[in-house]
Length: 111
Image (tube, rainbow, N blue to C red; front, side, top):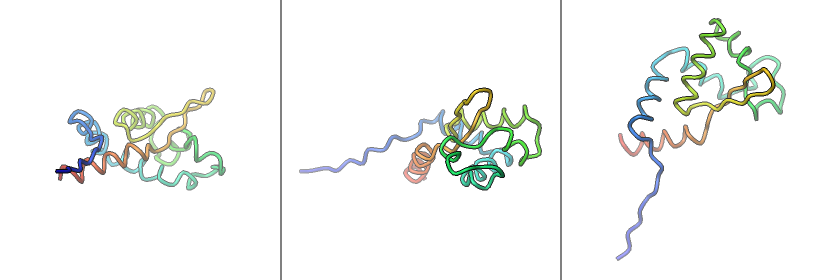
């Protein structure tokens, strides 16, 4: 008898709680939506999409303070929804599409 087992790296409960906490804030959700299209930020060039969007550009779009924007992005990073890349004194953020896909698979399997 042959059994096919679907192997999916599912989110653990603590990871899901971090994601739901991160997504509970409308500004953080909006940042994640904006990062889906990094070229929508003024001044972005074709190669920039690979490293992400500078915090200062995200901050300008949100209208929030720099420290609040950085804190919100750190929360999204800790939840595994974005990746931070440091270049000199600047930090760039992009969506972690692989982890977002894993999250969606987990939600599909669980619910």
